[in-house]
Every structure is written in structure tokens, then in C-alpha cells.
Amino acid sequence: MRQNYLKGNYGYGHAKSALFELILEKYAEQRRIFTELMNHPTKLEEELSIGEVKAKKMAQHKLSEIRKALGFA
Image 1 (cartoon, one colour):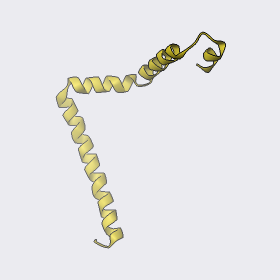
Image 2: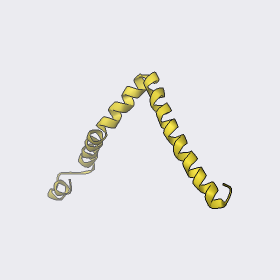
Image 3: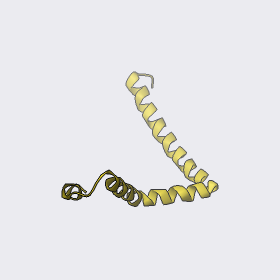
Image 4: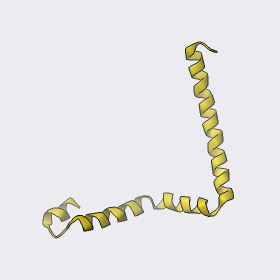
């Protein structure tokens, strides 16, 4: 992109389009997953439940460490 700009005839509009295309390409898989989950609410709920279990386990572990550090356990 820098080389195109230095050669000339390449402005903000070109850079903006190139950046947009790069973003679409880079996050294509994440966008596909998002669309899939938005179109299937039961699958979304399943994924959220899995995340909830993981987060709860991590939080309980961290709170246990904090309680020990503060002398409450």
C-alpha cells in the first residue's frame, strides 16, 4: 500500500477500499461463525452454556486464590 501511495495516483479512497477488503478477508471465518450462530439460536445457547461453565470454573479458582491471599480461607 505504501508503495502504491508513493508511486502516486493512489489516495484515501483506494487505501480505504484496500483496508476494507483486507478486513473482510482476515475476519471471514469469524463472520461465518457469527452468522451461523445468529441463524441458529439453539446452537448459540449451547455455545454460551459451554462458555459459562468455563468462566465459572476460572472465576471460582481465582476467587479461591484471592481468599487465600487475604487470609479468608
